[in-house]
Length: 354
Image 1 (cartoon, rainbow, N blue to C red):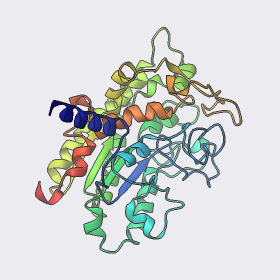
Image 2 (image 1 turned 180 degrees about the vertical axis):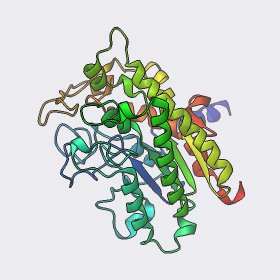
Image 3 (image 1 turned 45 degrees about the vertical axis):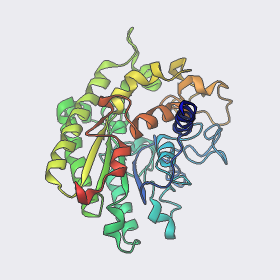
């Protein structure tokens, strides 16, 4: 009997480690975001923010796809964990019955503010992504019932700091707003888009906070660390935004009785992921040789020990880094990882029976 119990426990552990999911837990997965989760929407844009060349995708089946990583991104891993048998297609290629299973609208360099990332060229802002989603909804019969069971993941705001507020050579927001005022402006715009998504069927919504943008290699190279491991004023600004975003989730959960939002604390995950994820040795430099704008130099050979790096280029995580975040997004490691509960619980929630 004891041997049988031990065998069952071992099988469960192996399934967890392999991110296996028995059956698809939700009918669709709709993704809004920036380069952290873009999987090809920028490939057809006139933009410097593109990852459709080597060494991007060096570990991804089929090679470069537009993902800003050597392999999978956070949402790819989560799609596996949710039981999908394929990755969610980008908006530019999704058509027909594909849209029922979800669409990825994310666009590299995109922000909450319309002008964010303009120095890099074409990109699809948060409002543009929401408009694309509205176009998708028009293709779905009996949309309300179907969409209400789907998961929505929204992660924007990083570029509003990296490619706007802390880039005075291109933008005046840093002199126009205090960090608190800027965060409030972003939240006001964010709220409008969330309300539109809700109006068009979104009911299970995961809102992802901004990570430690002051710790990415590009920012440290640009500003200098002065003995610190991160740029503190940049991280402090991100915390201002996250604090207001978390409050927005609480407020909307009170206001929208037919929906449930959760807050994913990606900023907090940065504190522990490196120490608990066995094998990370390099946390302040990227694996590939980077251009001046922080992306990989085309055709350059990257490091071979990719699993030991948190960062792939000077902005974006390696596949291993993405997996560390995805695991804690799907099922919380610490109570602070998500609020009021994790993505796994959100997927299981029957909105009509709250």
